Structure formats: C-alpha cells, structure tokens
Image (cartoon, rainbow, N blue to C red; front, side, top):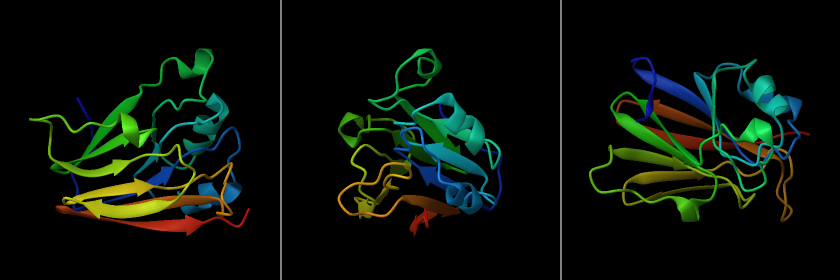
Length: 162
C-alpha cells in the first residue's frame, strides 16, 4: 500500500541517495521548499534522516550498506502516491519489478550506482539522483528534484557545491 500525499495540483519532491553518513548542507537548502524527500538508500545513519526531516517529511528505503538496529525498520522498497500516480522507491534498480495489476507507475527512484541519471522508458520516468555523500566516477555530489503536475513528472539533477 503506497503512502498517499494530500491531494493538490502539483508536488515538488526532493530525491537523494547514497549519503553514506554524510549530508552536505547544500542538500538541505535545495530541499527547503519540497513537499517530501525520498531517500533511495545507503543512508549511513539515522542522524541523516533526522537532518533531512528538518526540511520536509522523509520516506526512505534501506540500502545494501545500511545495517544496525536503526536500519531494521526501513523497508527494501516503498511507494508514494502523488495525485493519481505512483512513485516507486528502491535502492538497487535490479530489485525493482513492476507487478501486473500494480498501481499506475509514473516514476522509479533508485540509488546504488552513485551515477546521476534521468531517463524515460515505456512512459516511466527513472531517476537516480547520484550520490550526495560519496560521489564516484568523477561525478559531483548530487541530488534531484521531481516535479509532478497532473499526470506528468519531470526531474532535474542538482550538483551540490560541497
């Protein structure tokens, strides 16, 4: 059963992944005016989630590096309903399967690769916000913003200064 956001005409959703225990202050600034923050795993500590909650409510999934008592309550996957459409959240995209009869999927948010990516496949928007806390492959620390209006969704990647 997905988490259901209060009905409204449009939503701004912050996307973050792979903080690995480090949250750049720039990320909080980017997320100040969002309705919700989705963390796609490899969080690193409960403190990261508490810090993000200062900007907006947070929905998070457990990544392969999230261990210990604080992470046991995190699900492996989560869904959020924004209006009539659903956003799926998973750490590793290889673990995502669209089930027959599942709610209409508009976007899938994932992490794990540390590589920022936005692409549309078969009408579904796939967004990996990259890594906010441990970028690799010469990438900058990055987050993303997802804009949902009616039945459409777009995303923008935002490189952080830190």
